[in-house]
Image 1 (tube, rainbow, N blue to C red):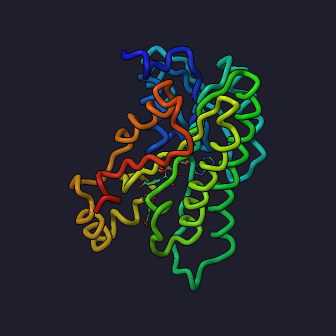
Image 2: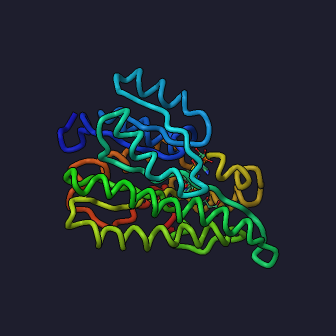
Length: 251
Ligand SMILES: NC(=O)C1=CN([C@@H]2O[C@H](COP(=O)(O)OP(=O)(O)OC[C@H]3O[C@@H](n4cnc5c(N)ncnc54)[C@H](O)[C@@H]3O)[C@@H](O)[C@H]2O)C=CC1
Ligand SMILES: O=C(O)C(=O)C[C@H](O)C(=O)CO
């Protein structure tokens, strides 16, 4: 492997690593050499088994990221089990769909707490470990709705817009401490998160028509961007939001 992208000896925490984009990213980081702490509410056995089959160390850390309570514990368990923490991928997220006129406080708080508040406090917990240990890489998972409004997903759009601002702010504050904070903005990727869109004939057609690549994205499409931003190839990349969208934003 080109040494610029070699993650051997690095340890990556990936939240929501049991499914979808998180699993795709965790396996790409493992393929590039990183050991993996797969964080999530539900079973990540498949991710961990596959990472181990590549010769990596991989551990499951159970945590519910709808509150910030587990943030410090995730960092401590990662260091206890895998010896260090170099890379954090803040991927776990949820979406709630309803017209804004009917949107409930519960649907607002649930999404903001998981997609934005937990992202900040887990980044803070990771940075408190990374700074005295020479730095690291933090990658937040943004969205097309970091740049666009979307429809019927008000708390999701607010959370992903917030991720964009937070990524830049944290990059400003922590660049001098040796931490690179960046984001990946996936396009429309076929996962549980977008199941309602895939199942809706009209929305599915509208989405397909707008993607120059001519297909929905797949979780593994995000792997290359994650490896790049986690690697020393990205040492001078700060506060960037890297779209991996089949050309959606270019349309
Ligand atoms: N699928 C898509 O088109 C896009 C997805 N994204 C983002 O990618 C990320 C991953 O989503 P997908 O893989 O698409 O969907 P997914 O539904 O397969 O994955 C979501 C992951 O987050 C975890 N999660 C949710 N709530 C949690 C909680 N309270 N505690 C711990 N883990 C929790 C789930 O267990 C799951 O592993 C999300 O942040 C989503 O907003 C961003 C842009 C596009
Ligand atoms: O537009 C929607 O509705 C979505 O579900 C948006 C996707 O989840 C997304 O984040 C696209 O980047």
